[in-house]
Length: 162
Image (cartoon, rainbow, N blue to C red; front, top):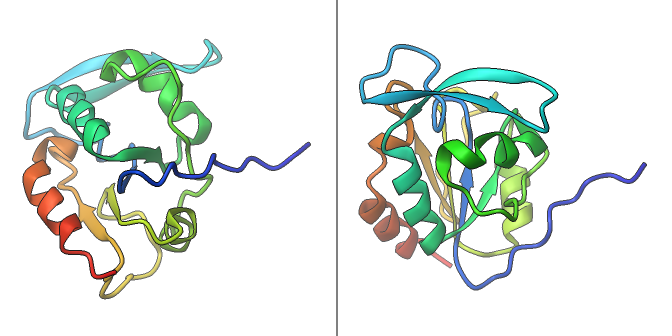
């Protein structure tokens, strides 16, 4: 069996690397409006998840500005499971096969492109310290992506030193 490798970035836009837990799925008590969704990947399992009501629109706008890549414990299931709840395109976005200590994998995948990594506050086992080649956004787990200011994010990405 061959090892999965995400298709390379197109290179025409910055990358937006998205986690699922605490970003698209609110695991605890939400501080924003959410809707419960019954998600499944290929009908092999099902799970009820709370998705911020603002998530579909924010992710749609994010996808217009960035090339979106998944990096979460949901792996290859992320796009399929959340396609309906988030209004995702039919062609799945690539995923990075990594659950923890994602920074090195993101940098390797980006190949020098500007990137933003939007994830929960507890996803890495090590503090990344100062980052100059990308932008790390740690969301508030009670509001997830609904708390991300996309205009501020765009400004931060424009300020990446290259």
